Image (cartoon, rainbow, N blue to C red; front, side, top):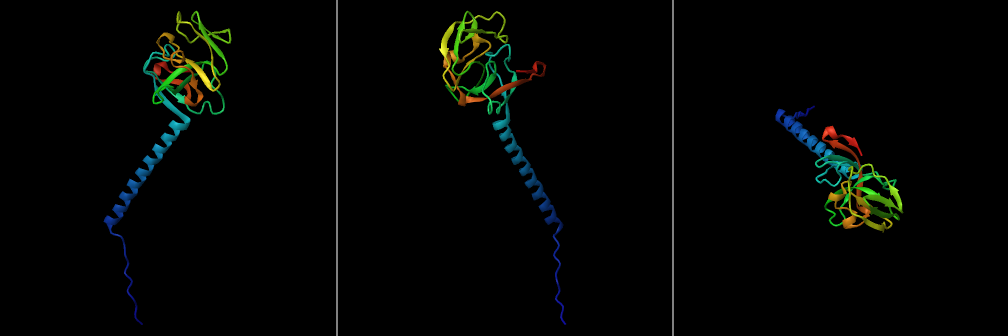
Length: 188
């Protein structure tokens, strides 16, 4: 009886090293792709960080502060008076703005003698700089699906008094905390 010789094929050492290299490169690419996808998901749906370049929210938020904004804040609830909100600027949606919500849909807003009145009733604003005086505005009624936004530093703020109401669909999220610089860490 004849026996057939079976040749045993074992991969060479260089072939094994090549597979390990490919495997390591593939693994690294997978990790990077997953990390980018997670970062995109978090930034889009969970939270984002924003740098504040202007003095419109002083003293609450100083120039160059960085804040964390939760994008899901208004999925189940509506913005409330006093919320600090990041939104797409209505006149140029490529720009993001941050202001305080002071007028809700259906309310009549009036700024008179440097005080805020909603539907004729005085509203305390403890977040404003002490002694701040600003021009009268209104009364004006906020349309449904819109908000009236103002900076805390009213004399240095381009807000609803100049560009109009904020449509609800331009809201990005609610500012939650100042996280940078560390010595200014504060909940908003």
